[in-house]
Each structure stands twice: as C-alpha cells, then as structure tokens.
Image (cartoon, rainbow, N blue to C red; front, side):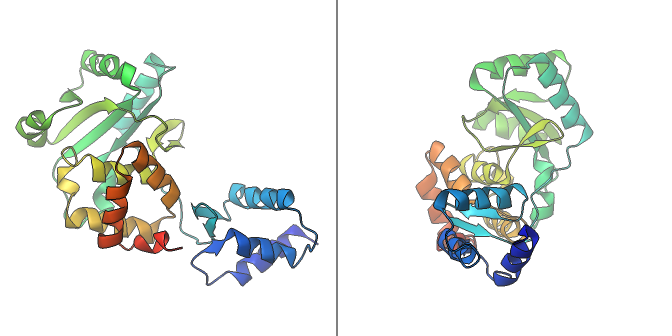
Length: 250
C-alpha cells in the first residue's frame, strides 16, 4: 500500500485531534498492517518525526498540529558575536539569544534589551574577556542583583555572559546555536532577577502565546527544569497560571 495513502489517511483520521497517543497510532497502523511488529512501528514513528509530520508533546503523546517550529531572527550584532566566538572557541559549546525575540509575545514592550551569551562553565571567563578585548560595550559576567539594578537595567542594551547548563535543549539556526523555546521559557521562570521585566502577567502571557503559536515539547521543558532543580515549581506555575496545563493532562 502506498505510503502517501497511509499518511493521507492518518491526517484525515486525526485531523481534529489535539493530540494522539502512541497506542492510537499503533492501532491505526495495525488497521492497514495487521501483523505490524513493534520494532517496525517504531520506525514508522521515527519517519513521521523526520518528515516533520508528527511532533512529540511528551513521552508517548504526539500532535499533527500545523504549528511551526520557532525560527529566530538573529540580529546582525548577535550574529557577529556568535561567529567570532565560534572561531575563537571552536571546541566550546556556546549558544546566543536576544530578549528582543520576546517582543512579539509580550503585552508591554521593554525599552531595554539583553544579548545572552551562554558558554560551558569552564569557558565563561575566557568568553567574557574576549568580548571585552573586542571592544564590545556593557559586557557583564554572570551579574549579581547589584550589577543588574545599578548598571544593566540603566543601559539600552547589555551583553550578559553566563554558564550554559549541561544538556540544555538547543537548536541550530544557520550554524549558530540558539536556545529552544522550551529552554527560553524555563530560563525566564528560573532566572527571575536577570529577566525581571518578563515576570508576573508578562510571563503568563508569554507562555500562553507560545503555546498557541508554536509546537512545544512539555517533556523537553520539564527535563530541563529538572536539571535546574525547578521542575516542581515550574509545573505548579504552569498548572495554576497558564493554558499549558492542557499538555500535562494528555
């Protein structure tokens, strides 16, 4: 039976389902292949994910939702920094992002922005001094609350160098490593002092907007929150304050 036919049938069968369980998918394929083995079915799942037809929500739960994957627009200055750091520290894992990316997901637009440079802990000081030597202004290394209030919040734009949490969920955008949406959402929740303009009702609005607009992986999010020892607090926040609680019940 042609693969395209089965995929078309899959889309029709689950067109109005917000989510699909692994068991439902297995039963669907068994209706066409009664002798389907579990190992072969695993390859069917893998193939659908590779073709971007199936997106995981959490373990054993998927969606055929047409929601796109977030593709950030990396501004010229941030791209320049990322390229320089990649050349200077080719073996160091580094990711970059800008709080300007949050603008479209917020109620109020902040007038001050941060460029975040996250590097493996052993390299953060080297990255910091390299950026200083390259004459970038307003560069801070893992700032404390005093620096944030006295200097960083007074500048239109600042560069913050901070440690990259091991196994943090990252993406690649034209060979530049950037945080996944799940990582950004967890970091906003955990690092409240750095991201103080994005707390309260703004954080709730950001979470709800991202859920409506993009495909999110709740397992990826909670696994990263666990690495940051904030899984319970995050789940409590999601349950009480956001519509992402729908993902937890699936």
